[in-house]
Length: 157
Image (cartoon, rainbow, N blue to C red; front, side):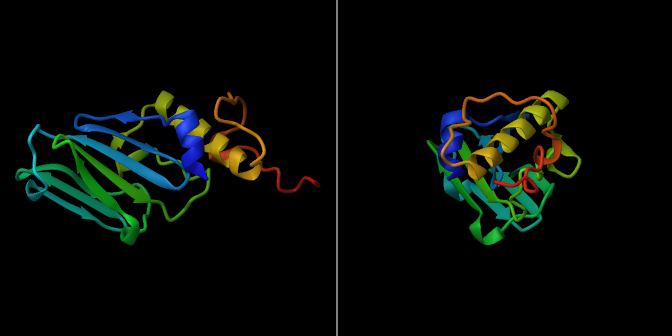
């Protein structure tokens, strides 16, 4: 369901020295630019529940403890056009309030504006899931969106 929302509304990337990372309620996406001509044999990638390590041609690109827990059995990486590595991590906590502020604990932090935009997108994604008949992909949100936005569960339908 969120794939369609992402396609219509886009993701908010957090730029890094090696590429970027972004997130939805369910997944974290990492894009790493590598030297043109890189082969899969030159890539060493470990995707754990709480850690990630990526080495390309013997050079460490990313290594550390993830900001949040992931489902390691569902993590994947691909090498595209011999110049871009895409990593997809599945979050264990898939709530709108679970907006990662950094990719790794203390590293690759989103600045305040990017963090704000990420949280807004996750809140709109939550609204889309709760109201499948509406299209929130082009919506703007203001007010209380931190922590996943307002809780309407106590309201009667």
